[in-house]
Amino acid sequence: QYAVFQELPFHYIEIAEIIIREAKDDIPDLHQVRERVRDIQSVRQNKILAGLKKITDASPIQLSHLAAAEVSMIRTFFVGALNQFHRQSQAKTDAEDAAAETARRAAAAAIATSARGSGAGERTNQ
Image (cartoon, rainbow, N blue to C red):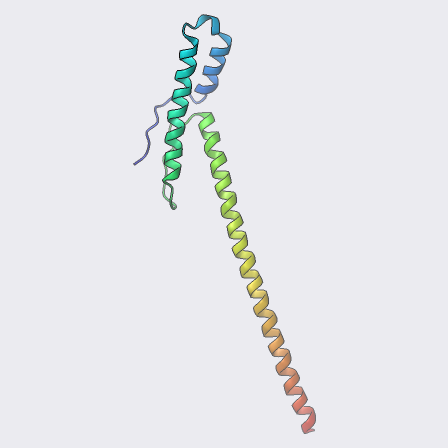
């Protein structure tokens, strides 16, 4: 089940901040208007966070009607998550490379030991 976001202007937060700052003398109950904008931001942010917590695998998520600041918040989350995946993947690759190098060295040592053993036996028979 996807959270449904009411469509708002993409920059509604920034627009509200500018209007509140520039027209504060013209807005009755300015404090209430500012609080309502914060309430809207809070509700939407909580919906986003709840949706992100539900991500458990490569499942699709719907992110329609997000505002610029909300997209920025999600971008920060995803960049952090992708960096973590990259670090884990790199650590796994490094461990696999180290194991392969150890196996190559062990095989080379076994071949060298075998060759020395064969060569020594051939020299004594001659």
